Length: 72
Image 1 (cartoon, rainbow, N blue to C red):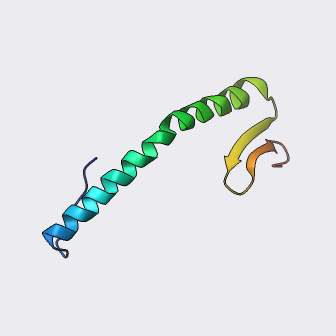
Image 2: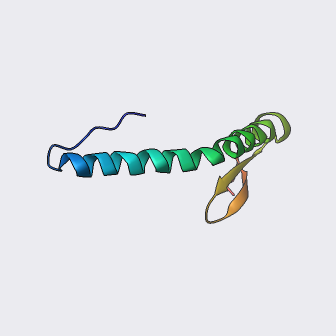
């Protein structure tokens, strides 16, 4: 991933920020497989199994079954 460096910061600051962003991105890659599996799971349920309902995932409510006709 490419990062734009700021002209307002020193070269050292830009290098440190870029290194931290790359480290952060690398740490988040552990969730890629989980995300792909969850996305496939939701696609299967929403497009093949549930006729008038859909499932969503949120941080606040977890898995949420939504009635498409009544919106919950």
